[in-house]
Image 1: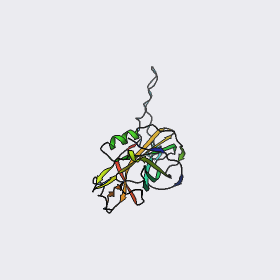
Image 2: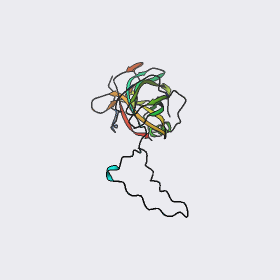
Image 3: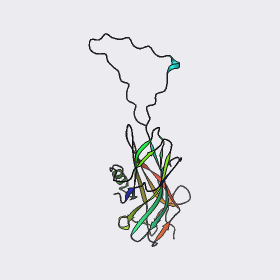
Length: 235
């Protein structure tokens, strides 16, 4: 289940930045160290009953044809950068930097973002699906993100140690955190959602991450990396 979450718009500043991309390696973690919208069909107007049939309109010259845009809507992309993880006796805290980039052609309005800290486990996909489908909770919303602009914010998620699933790896206790994000927004034509999830761990050589130890007492990890999981929502 989702362990912790909350509205994210406590701090932001706008800038132009592309969103993160990529997927995880199936064998992702190392052993611990010893220490667009569908286009509707065209409408065919019928004459009133009894009216004389009208000849079809003449085709306009090729030079007079223009381009009609049917995809004028926003589209949010999510990028994340974990900053630090603080392991304490009572809880685990992960601080992160989140980017919301509007790659669409219209402003994204009433933007609400929420985060949750989960465990990597056999029920991971079900837990993520439940979080992605959860209605937005009460929280501050950002008025607008213009097209081809982004908002960056810094926040954290917290989970009690009793909710953290521990693993025995190389004789040590460790855990593998997953941070999930929901971004909900509106525009003049409807509502949209972008949801994504990331594995978080210690940066290691190659394309792998190292797990986070839980048996070293109070400890802070700062050299963290993330890997985008192949699950999410985009509508």
